[in-house]
Length: 336
Image (cartoon, rainbow, N blue to C red; front, top):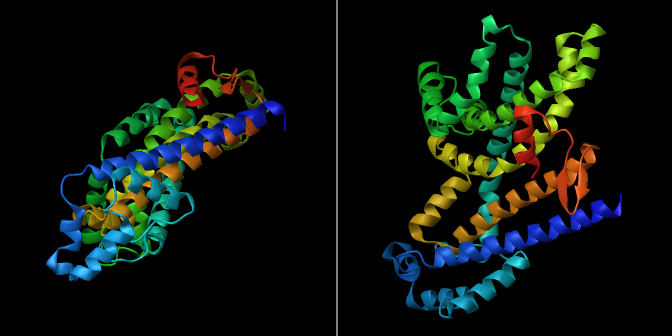
């Protein structure tokens, strides 16, 4: 591991930490300026049943009686040591509340990512080896179609067809295998569009290279040629694209959970917004920022290790592979 990579990795790590801290500060400020008084809406709401003594205790514990800058400093210092505070609505640990619903969201997000990758690979394979008269041109239009249809529309269609018409799952049991599968399909279809577009462009580029012609002359079958010679060099930019779509994946998971009636981070956010439960909102948004930044950091650090053609010059990535036609433009934007 050379000095250039160590310098590059250190710079990326520092940038990631700064972005996470700025995201937390921005979230605190945005939540603090929301209209309405959280003390009145939450603590003094008769439905919650807090006494005046309990309200004063919660206000003191949350530091809501202190200036905004002091609240920010206290909240940020707690965040740095992993203390996400207490919920204003339930007075429970925010960490515990998130831990209870996070597994369901992670399962859905991971399943949606797997569906997106498989669908993108199948579409990309078809564009390279299916005859044009059998839909090669049509397959190239699928990413644009997938990108134009919101995941909640796909989810409602899947629920109507496979839930009500075929009875593969019951909407009152959203955590069953088939309900989770179709929720992942609804989440993965729009995300697969971006991955497929980049993969197709790079496959087009790699298929014109001399080593591909040599492999074909050796009599390799289509599947062997695709798996052994085209997929690996073409999929390297996909790593960065996948990292960039993590934010969309998390956001889509929240919407998909609402459509399929799943209990996850989405339902927790919905309740927190309606009750202005500030500690929970700050924790969820900050957690999403941490996940997004860490995934992109890992992609940035892994990419130079996987592709020896990448040169680290002044902390920026440069690749000689990004020099041809349409795939060059996409690869340059991905690597920048």
